[in-house]
Each structure stands twice: as C-alpha cells, then as structure tokens.
Image (tube, rainbow, N blue to C red; front, side, top):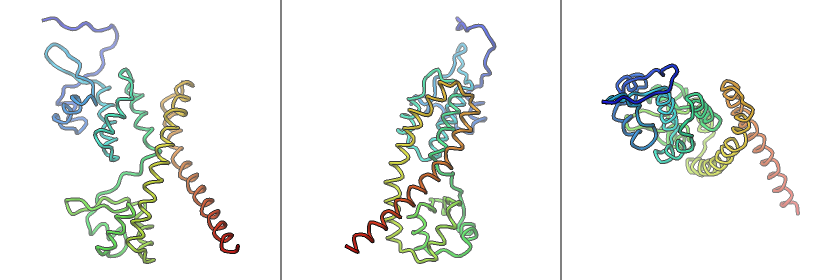
Length: 244
C-alpha cells in the first residue's frame, strides 16, 4: 500500500481520534458529526488511520465557543464557512478572541439555594419570572438556574423597587431588538474595517488580542453615554411639547 508524500520540514504533532476526544472533552461521536457538517476538516490520512492536528483542535475549540454563547448549529456553520481553509491555528484562535467584545460573560449554574444566597434574600416564583424577563436568571431542566451573576444585584434591586413583571417583559423586548441591531452593526464594522487593518499592519496575535479585549469596555461606555444623552434629549423634547 502506498503512503502519501509529505513536504519536507518538521512533522506536526498529531493525535488519534480518541486522543483528540480526551484532550478537548468532546465525544468521538460529536467530532465525527462536526466533520460531516464541514465544521472540522477531514482527518489527516496515514495509511488506513486518520490523525488530527493543532488545526483541528483550534477549529473544534472555536465551534465549542460559539455553541457556548448560544449560536445555533446553522449559525456556527455560517461563521466557520467564512474562515479560510488554510487559516493557521493562531488565526483561528484570534477568531475566538474577536467574539469577546460582543459576548456576555458566560453564566454560572446555581442551585435555588445558591442563587438566593447570592441574591441576599428569598426569591418568589413571580420574582424569578421577572429576573428571567430581564435576562438575568434562566431555569434549567435540572432544577437549577443559569445566572448572569454580574447583573444579579441590579436585578434584585429592581425587584425591591417593585418592578412589575409585564414592564420587565416589555423592557427586555426593547433591549433585545436594539441590542441585536447594535451588536450586528459593530460586529460587521470590526470584521470589515478593524480586522483587515490589523492584518495589513501585520500586528502580532498578542497585539490583536489586547486590542479586542480593550474594545469591550470602551464599547459599553460609549453605549451608556449615547443612551444617557438620548434620554436627556427625550426629556427636553417632552418638556418642550408640554409647554407649547
């Protein structure tokens, strides 16, 4: 049986399917499924055996990152399809970094007891529904809760002020609609303007990663400032209409 020829140079470190599964925590079945959907390249053939490289690891980690942030399989496929087939593991890792400015912190899974301990008081079912409407607490099938811990104290303070559940639902609809539009436009701006500029300047992966990590707080601050200015302008316009 013939063996494939390979270019001269150091042989990349390769793993078997079982080794890749153990090192990444992804089941063999899922790795094969991702491969059939085009999310991972086919294994490297060595005779009758297939092996996996750092490129497979990087792409697998990107898929898991996207899924952890709530991307559907179809959305993951569209995202991965935009990455060149010859992209290096370092470039793929940067794509994971580029997700950071737009993604919320991953939630923590808490029991009802731990959730109430974090909240500092008991939470009734209606209050849990309101926190859910605000996008802070999400019940799971296992009887636990996915909690955006960074926002929990703010949510509890709103409960203490007596925020009605229907108001929370209406506010969440507004946040979702406008937040999605802002995220999509900023993502497109970063993808089409910022990312190419860094590539053209031949910035190191570390420089790009640092720039991206700093971009999130700047973005949040700019959004808060724009919101505050808009609220003040709306108040002035309302007062002006009432005095006419």
